[in-house]
Image 1 (tube, rainbow, N blue to C red):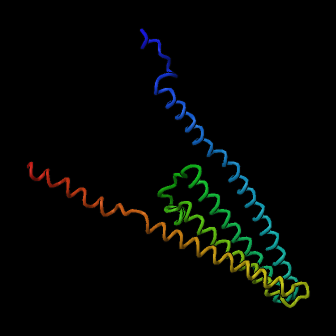
Image 2 (cartoon, one colour):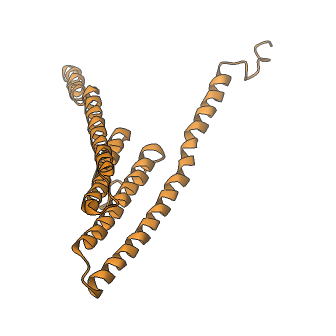
Image 3 (cartoon, rainbow, N blue to C red):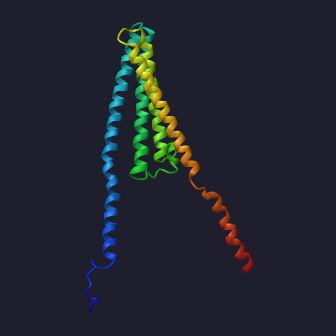
Amino acid sequence: MRLAQLSVADSPAGPRTMLGRVGYVMFLSRWIQVPLYLGLIVAQVVYVWRFMAELLHLMHLGFSGHPPETTVMLIVLGLVDVVMISNLLIMVIIGGYETFVSRLRIEGHPDQPQWLSHVNANVLKVKLAMAIIGISSIHLLQIFINAARPTITDRELIWKTLIHLTFVISALALAAIDRIMENGRPQHGTGGAERPGQLQQPERMAA
């Protein structure tokens, strides 16, 4: 009778069930990030609009007169900058969603990005760092082209060069850390290859 009167909360299964529910709610909280990635898609649409506006401006200058080569080069670099930022957004949207929210389930699709098959948090950080270096290089090149203008000071050139070098050093550090972590992980291929042979030997003896 006393055992029958014990409540579910007093049993060991009660706290485990509550902890399981809390953990499941925490696991579901990853879907809160979905509006963030949708917002980045909207930002990408804005960049596409800006790209088209700059392209029309370049076509107007190129076909209506003889603009200076420096002006055309700066506009083209601006277009490349927009494309690289758009590529960065794509990596953050697809890679971040695949890593932190849910699987995209596009295995076998002909348009699946090659880097998406082995993406994780460390690989995503390295790729984002490389993309930021590319964007910083474009901005630095624009500054060097405009170096003859009085608005560009030597102090600005030095500081932007140092910032670019900081990005490069940070990317190299991230890549080195990822390589160290990759080498420190246990290799499961060798152990997995030996186990079938060990299991086949008793079968042969029994036969």
